[in-house]
Length: 178
Image (cartoon, rainbow, N blue to C red; front, side, top):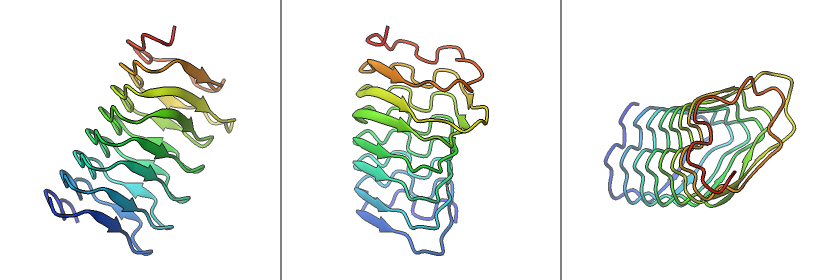
């Protein structure tokens, strides 16, 4: 349930069983030594603030069934270097990866994305390129300041035609982009 392993500072690795479909909000909040998460095949949703401040987490590979990463899910995971999204991801919540400033290199946005919340990747200083794959015909709702202060960003490829509009501050202070 909610806050189940909050502040569990000795937890190093998590492997979820196949029957678990949703992770609760604040479930693993501030597990400062957590380095590895193995998501099961049935996982569809990660709760708000679930892994916030897990400062030792370095890599995320999301399973095929995951559709939702809720608000602040990985906020301040400032050792996180690599994130691989699956092809079925639909929602990235507000500030989901806020201040994960070590996420490095290319960020591939999948073709099922329907919603990206405010400041979802703000202050991710080392993201250098964002690649949007071919999209379904659904409109994509994007929040404000999604990539604010991504100072390493130099390329954005294939912004889909079905993005309704580029909101206020979407690429604010991305000093190497323009």
